[in-house]
Amino acid sequence: MAVANTHIRGSAALGRLTGWPRVLWVTGTVLLVTMVVHIAALVITGDPMSGPVSLRKPATFAETGWLTAWSVAVILPTLHTRAWQRHVIGTTVILFSVGETAIIGFQAWRGVPSHYNFTTALDAALMRGGAGGTAGIFIIGVIVLLVAALRSGGTSPSLRLGVCAGIIVLLMGCIIGFVMISNNSGVYEGSVGAGFARQTAAYLGPDAATVGPQYGLLRPATRGGDLVAPHIIGIHGLVLLAVPAVLLARTAMSPARQLKVIALAVTSVVVGMVLLLVHALRQLPLDQLNPLALTALALCAIALLAAYAVVGSAVLKSVSLSLAEPRSRLE
Picture (cartoon, helix red, strand yellow):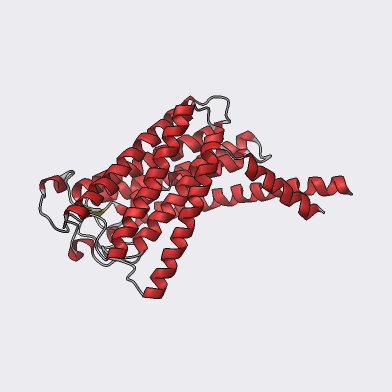
């Protein structure tokens, strides 16, 4: 009987989702399935995990897409937004997450590079319209989301901090991505916009010597600074900071303790991202991080995991109490 009641309550909660949150949940689910399909294809075909041509790329973009879509779906109900703001935010999230994943997947299945590829008119159009165009549109939505978050009063300090910090980190990740696009490379070698001067019809991305050995997403020996690492942290800003803040706000934890936990998470992510970005802008590879920086990054990771453990514990406790209520009524 209790299980049946729980199922009914869960179905009712899903049914109450309307408008953009519901659309974004569905979109995220489709992208999650897309990611799983590409991971399976990667394993079955034995496709390489690294390099400019790999089925890993649509899998990673689908991963970013579903997490972003679901994160915005969680955040939107907590903000005071006007209809046009919700339309802009929802539309740009879908254009970016679905559009980029589709373009990256199309190029990967064609067996050609998806990034920095101007070999044919089609490749150039997909690069400019996909990597550049949809990302540019997405930034508009992120800015609208940030303005709405900053103007949303009546929320707890921890929720406001987590959501605003998550959006700002996301925005920084997008800006880093544009620097990468402008240079036709995720390896920073001291310039911004260097790629705009190269008009050759070819693959203009970095060569293997510049990238160095690559282990999945880790590139420890680049010939310059690796912008990919801080970019990855940035584009996951919402799920790293905003979503935990929303989940924690729904628990019985005291507001003062909530603020401390979210502040710890924000500090960990921001400090870690800044350390990696400064190191990259100094044109140094990751394997040249000094012991002090490595220690600081390790402490950031430990502190972030500790904050997530507190959030997870509080959420599980809240769920347990919620499930116990109908059971006590039945008894």
